[in-house]
Length: 275
Length: 268
Image (cartoon, rainbow over all chains, first blue to last red; front, side, top):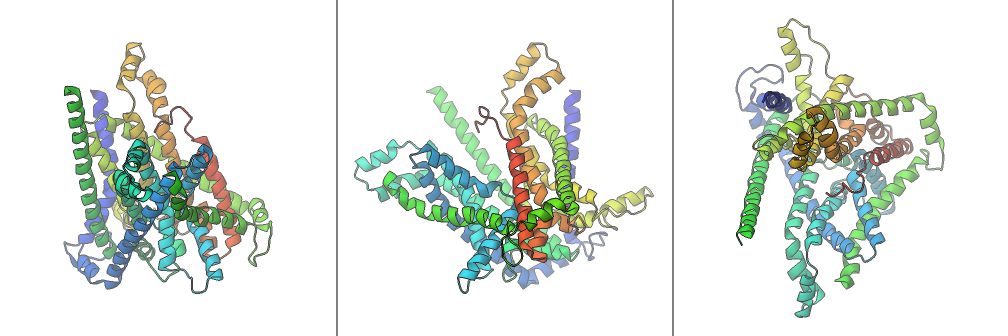
C-alpha cells in the first residue's frame, strides 16, 4: 500500500515534468505581451499574426504536401521491397536485404543528412539542372521512410498463408491478378500503418531536411529552427498550440481505434471459448 | 509469385543502391579527401593527433552517457509504476503524446523557461535567489536532451515489463524471495531487453543532436553531431566532416554491439 502511494507520487512528478514545459509554451501563446516571461493579459493577437502570416502558411502547406508525397512514394517502394525480400529463396539474400534495409533506420540524422548532401552534390555535378531544393528534400524523405514501411508491411506478409496465392492461381488468376486481388488487399492494414509512419517521419524530420534543403525550399521544422535561433516570437507559441491540438486529436483517435481493436479481439476470444 | 520477384526488385534495389550503398561509400570516400578532392590521410591524422577533436569525442560521449543514465534512472521506475496502474494503456499514451510535438518546439519552450528572466529564474527569485545564467550552459543541454528523450526510455521498458508473466513474480515470492531479490533476480533480468533498446534509442541520437547544442547549449561545438554540421554547412570542410562522421558511425556500431539483444529473448 505504502509502495503504491510512492509510485503514484513519483508518476505525478514525472507527468508534471513532462507536461509543464509544453503548457508553459502553450500558455504564452495567449499572452498579450511579446515575451515568454511575463503574462500581461489574455489575447489572441498572436494567433491573428499566425493566420495572416502567408509565408508561414505556405510553408505549412508545403510541409504537408511533402509528407503526403514522400509517404506515398515510400509506401510504393517499400511494398515492392517487402515482396522482394519475402519472396527471396536464399536465406542469405533475405538476411542481407533486411540488414541493408535497417541501415538508414539506425543511422543518426546528421550522418544521413551529410551523406545525402554529398550524394546530391555529386549528382548535381553530373546532371545539369539538378540542385538542392524541393526534389532533393522529397528524395531524402522517401529514402529514410522506405525502411519503416518495409518493417510495417513485412509482419503482415509473414502472417499470410501462401496457399491463398496458390488457390488464386489454381482458379486461373495470373500473377498480376493474384497480386492485386489477393496479396495487396491482405496487406492493406500493414500498408496503411506504413504510410502513416512514413507521413509522421516526414513531418517530424528536421536534421536531414536541414542538410539537403539548400535554402530554396523550407519545411516547418526548418522554419521553426531559424526563428528559434533569432529568439522568442510568440507566433511560434501560437503555432505550437495548434500543433499540440492536432497531436491530441490524432492520439485520441489512435486510442479509440486501438481500444476498439482490443475489444474486438476480446469478443473474438470469447466467441472462441464459447464454441 | 516468385517469377514476379525481379519486377518488385527494381524500385527497391534502386533505392538500396542510391540511398544506402552510395551514401556509405561517399562518406567513407570523402573522409579520405582533402578540400581539393585529392586522396589524403590527413583528416584522420588531424583527428587523432588533435587534442581538440579527441576531447570533443570524449565530451560528446560523456554527455550522451549522462543523458542516457539520467533517462534510465528516471524512466525505469516510471515505467514500472505505470504497469501497475489501472488504465495503463491510457497513461502510456500520455507519456507518448509529448513525442508527437516537434523537439524543436520543446527546445524552444526551454529558451523561455531557462531564460535570464524566464520561468525558473522568476521562481528562484521568490526565494531571494538571484537570477542565474541557465540557458546556454552544458547543464541546460543535458537537461533538455534528457527531457526530450525520456519517453523513448519509458516506452521500451514499459513494453518489456508488461510482457513479464506475473506468475513468475508470485513464484519468486512463494520461494521466499523478498522484494529486492525478486526485483534483481526476476524483474530486472526479464526487462533487460527493454532497457537495452531504450539505451540504443537514446545514446546514439544524443551524440548527434546538433540542433539542441545550437539552440540550448549556447551555439558551441560540444558534440560530434554539432562538429559534423559545422564542417558540412559552415566551414565547408567536407573531408573533415566525413571523417568525424565515420568516427560517429564506429561509435554507433560499438554501442549497438554492446546492447544487442541476445538470441533467445529476441522474440519480438
